Amino acid sequence: MNPKLSFDPFSGAFLLRPLKRLPTLCVWGLLPAFLGVAAAVAAFEHTLCGPGIPPLTPFKYQLGIEDVESYPAIPLMRDLASLMLIATVPLTILCLQRQWRYIADCVHQLEESGALTWRQTPGEMGFLDRLVARRGLFEGGTDCRKRMHLILERLSKGNRLHSFLSALVALAAASALSFYLHESHAFLALAPSGSAREQAAWASRTYVNWWASWEHPSGAVLYAVFLTLGVYVILAQNYVSMKAVRILLAAQLFGNFNVNWLNIDGGYGWEPFRRVFRTAYLSMALRATQLVLLIVFLSLHNLVVVIAIGAIWLVFLCLYIVYPYWYLRNKVRSMKEEQLEKLATKFAELGLSIDAPSHTSRHFVEEIGRIQEATINPMQLTRLQSSSFAVLILLPVCLTVAQIVS
Image (cartoon, rainbow, N blue to C red; front, side):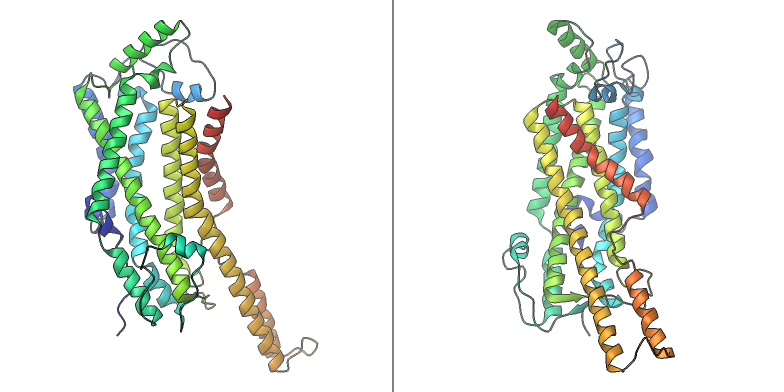
């Protein structure tokens, strides 16, 4: 009996392994828990409510709208950007859990649905295969299914060094951001009109009265924890996404993608792909929201940092959305053309003619029409979903361009 083709994404992120068996309802509970803990800490530090900068001031600043002078303080309930940023962390964890569970059994489900069959001999490796594949990853025997199983086993092995380095990078990023905020650079951009000294003094007072400043240690530590966890989750998600890209490349190298024309699952056998990529869309939308909030909150005007953020964002977008969409769209189109060609050949072999209609010829014509009208692209979204996603993913790019132009 052939072993099941499964992949364990949770093995590569040791801090996130409990998500593998944790019920989804418990993960949903992280959202009110995170916000509740932030509110409790702010209340303990007496920075939950009070006078301060209007919540929309950082957003107005990005649009070039100067707000009226306000009290130099940012209590938690007025810190809309931070509240939204904190909320995206548990939402990203929830999305990650669902995505990784779908990825784990995706190859097995594609094989079961008939959307993936195995070659007699492996295909040739292209430039992208060599670029993305690790050394020795695609090497093995001649049995394509066994080689695919070996690849999934290799990719499922946890990497303690990578997990440790990810935690260090996340901690370093949170520390760098804390230092940046401690120097009051973020609040300097929000200062009312005045001399440079007056603006610096205003920014310094604002930082002291910010709920997450080091003048309020509990809030600062909690904010650093949220930032560290958020960065770690993003790094872990990217690490597993790179493995998923390798799995996709291996599947096309050792297998053939097909269409189940019986359409039992409503996706012509491609429903497992559809579930994975819908979570990918949601993940990228959340990441875009985080980038927008980060740019707004930090009021970034460092050209190098802004360009770097925009470039990294475009790379991720192309690798996780654009390339799979382009590949699957072309693959489905070629499979439809192959099926239509088979039907046309069979139609001619049976000596059928449209000029002499019969029950059999009408069946062929109906089947050809059904194939031509079939919507199979597993990454296709509705018009409303596409519009919402386009707005979210373009916001970081637009803000980056606006910062460069200004």
